[in-house]
Image 1: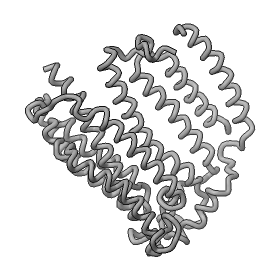
Image 2: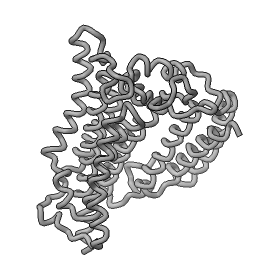
Image 3: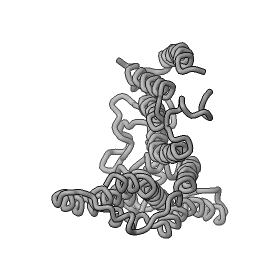
Image 4: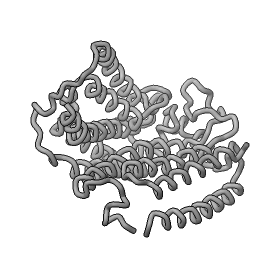
Length: 114
Length: 247
């Protein structure tokens, strides 16, 4: 059981990638990318967990009480907000593509053929 | 490359990647068996040194403040990209935005009560961000989301004060710029960039953490203005025209 959080993170990462590769819609593709990205949050928080540790907030909690790693929490929380704005940028690009190509299916857009 | 070949290649590559990740993860310490020194060090020194009781907040705005500044500018650049792509692509007038939203009176009453509460909770999250759970990032999102309720329960016209680019653009830029200004202020006073100023203050109060409070508010302002800019752009350029074409 002690590897379960890591396994879940790997699973989310691969499921997201799978969605990106098989996607037939750019909006769906962007959301799959966000799923892939969110696996990193689980990974970071899992790495920073200390057995029996509480939140690293010491208001009303005695200093020295076991707490989890604040660094990975700081990384995750800033990235969640930043990733939303990056997702918005991808969606704005999708709107632009839809205006030009008339479709959001990456397979039907000549410029996106790999 | 056809869809089929792409999926076959991915299946092989994905299995390989999954196996490699599984292998590498089997070699790291068990879940809960934390070994890294930084978490322990920060949890021990932040409260005595900075007098802020939220160690995560102090980590974001002080210990790795320089990194946060970089992330803040990723956010700033992404929003600027959306503005450049979407703003002004379709002509609009005030009449266009007055699409009547079919909502019930009950919805409006609840929304009216919730908007104020949500924005207030957001401001509280920002204000006490370095004392209790919260901070500029989370609070900024809460403030913007509270304001966005105005569109969901009423019309675009009600949301308009928060969608005003004349107001939101300067606010967002001020938030982003203030972070750098706080950093430069330390430089001017002969210390290194983003060095904590004003002394640590009283533990567990709003007067703790020195310049953490300023940086925290700068981020809160920027995040709230950035998200409101995004909401208003997508609503104006996409959602409202779509709703209009369906009525």
